[in-house]
Image (cartoon, rainbow, N blue to C red; front, side, top):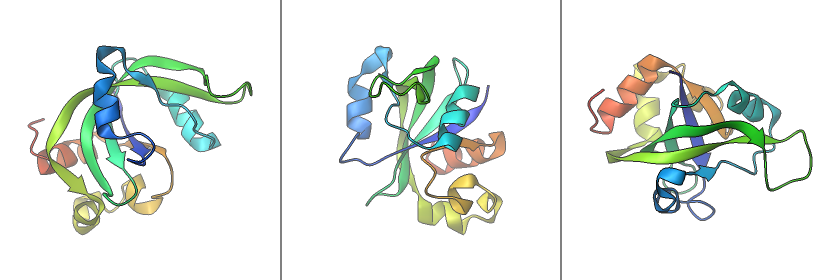
Length: 139
């Protein structure tokens, strides 16, 4: 299993929106960055991700699971763009803010810290464990 971070603006797609999709999940569509698209192409069923709100909150707020591998993005006819589907698994008991992540030296190499603009990014197993613990989840 691999780990990822999916970034959204609450005004566009909130954690509550994601929760509302239930087990069916939802396409993580609209991504128009080649690096982020390529990361989605690497994802496998069952991979886990952090649902991260990027505007005011700047915090990881939930755990998602990849429930459909890369396929054409339904929001465009351009064959270059693909997406995965994700479903919500669990709300973090305590959101983990970007400020907290940046303050933890164990997370200094995290992609979120080095390239905070990338909308889909990998998370190492160690980073995953640390953020889950910070958010109140046992790993």
